Amino acid sequence: AADKTYHFRVRASNRFGNSPWSEVATILPTPAAPEVRVEQVKSLSATLVWAAPEGHGFPVLHYHVFQCRSDDDTDVKEAVVPSATDTADDEGGEGLVRYHAQQLQPNSCYKFFVRARTEGGLGDPSPQCDVVTQPLPPPVPVNLGVGRIQPDALQLTWSMR
Image (tube, rainbow, N blue to C red):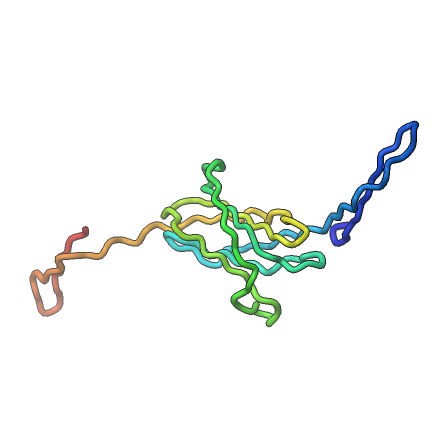
């Protein structure tokens, strides 16, 4: 069962008898997968948010966030995120964890998934969370000038960097 702690000992046997029992090996349950959603997407960043998953008797120590471009599974970046929460959820329950992915490329597709870590180890990955960053906004217009002025119209000119 996912929420049980198991203890094992073994010993060897052959036709001449049994060895002494081994030391005890303990297997602790790993945490459940978090449910991750996209909270905000900009041109160069994205914010992911999730609630702490079931730790099966152990507190979540931290999270591992994995990120790669949708068209390149070989270049995976990993970030370790503290388990501390920064806000309460809408129902006033436990807080949410936020991760701000930075230095993304504009107008690009990314895949993210998150795994929680407890004393029992690294849990299963969250379902994949897809992000498409926004295009960059246009540059600031420069050299603003006023052309013809008429009673009901005004002509403006400018150039783009």
